[in-house]
Length: 309
Image 1 (tube, rainbow, N blue to C red):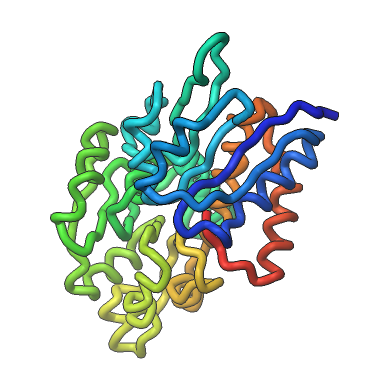
Image 2 (cartoon, helix red, strand yellow; image 1 turned 30 degrees about the vertical axis):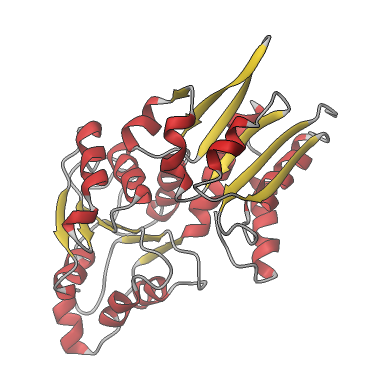
């Protein structure tokens, strides 16, 4: 059993209902890291620099939610290549330096979480013979969408279609795609029939929209026969896998609509589990005890805790 005192935390605003503490604390118990602590700390973008400046050698690392994933980039000593090309850091590793302030390394475990969650959905899906995918649709153009592009590329799809509210808000994701060497097609959400048709014909759909952001699409997918034809679903069915990164409500309206048409649905909670597991591995240097973390996640969800990464 380890009694070395190390600190870790998830930062964001608001953050009180984050599930990250339950996941990380369960991992520490399973790993026998009795001196390790993990807290949720409310930190705004304006307060982030001062918080980071106060980190010392007792700290192992930080988990970050939006908008801190991009705001932290200029505060780090080194950014790992994947996080650099994606343009988003959700993990900060604090590395002790003899006689000086700790070194801060930025990493991205969201990509790992998306890949792992999608692989779970692809296994056994009748539309797929293996983990590789051919066609994909991404909803949204924020930092999670950029991580999704990297994840899809790892799974064999470098030309997904990305639907955005406005092209003006897609600049950062377009630049990230260029750095990755992938070639997505960017389209606007209007008209929604076009979005639904693209979703229905895709092997994989990833929604990175905020809670309730895809409710209009969900309504379209659950319309009557005329609506079904407009959505492009064959005989009212869809064959692909949907990962909805939103967690509230559980399940999301989009997930319910997708499953009602026969599609395979992966909840964003699976992404949360796998990205947290990778954070545990990076911060502790030990393989994450995913079984213990999964049990803690199920217990937290059973108590109807609102979810936030």
